[in-house]
Amino acid sequence: MDALFALHNRVSTGLLTEPAPGDRQRRNIFRAALRAADHGCLRPWRFLLVEGEARHRLGELFLKAGEQAEPAPLAKIQRERFLAMPLRAPLIVVAVTRLVENPKVPSIEQRMSTAAAVQAMLTAAFAEGVGAYWRTGALAANPLVAGGLGLAENERIEGFIYLGTPQKPPRAAPELAVSDYFATWEG
Image (cartoon, rainbow, N blue to C red; front, top):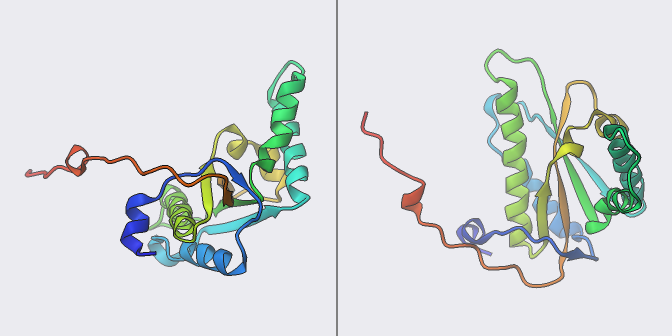
C-alpha cells in the first residue's frame, strides 16, 4: 500500500476477531514503531504483547484494578466487562514509556515519542490490512495494572493497542479540510 494512502486513510477498526496478525505483518507493524520521532535517540518505548490465555489473566488484572478503584462492590455486568476487555482482539500491544532523566529531553517528549510509535504502528497495521485501535483510560493510569504488568517505577502505560482481523471493511476516513487546522502565522 502507498504510504500516503495509508497516512490519509487510516481509521480505527473496533470490531476485531481471529486471527491475530501473522509474523510478517507483526514484523512490519513493530518495525514502524521503531521509526518514531525520538529526541535524543532515547528509544523510551517498549511494548508488551498479550495474546492467547494471557488475555484472560489481563482481564483478571483489569477486574482487580476496577474493584480497587470502586468503594462499593462491582455489579456482575461491571465485573464481566472488565474480564472481557482484553478479549476484544486476539493481540494486545501494551505501549510503555521508560522515563529517564535527561536535561535535554523532558518526560513529556519521551511520552510523545511513545505516542508517535503507537501512531506509526496503527498506520502500518492499516497498510497491512490489520484492524487496530488504541485505548487508554483509567486502566492505563492504574498503578495496580502497571505493577501487574511488571512495570518499573519510571515506566508509564501509554495505551493498549488492539490488533486483529477486521470483522467488516474499515469505514471511510472522514474528509477534513486542511484549512480548518492549518493557518499561516505572520508574527
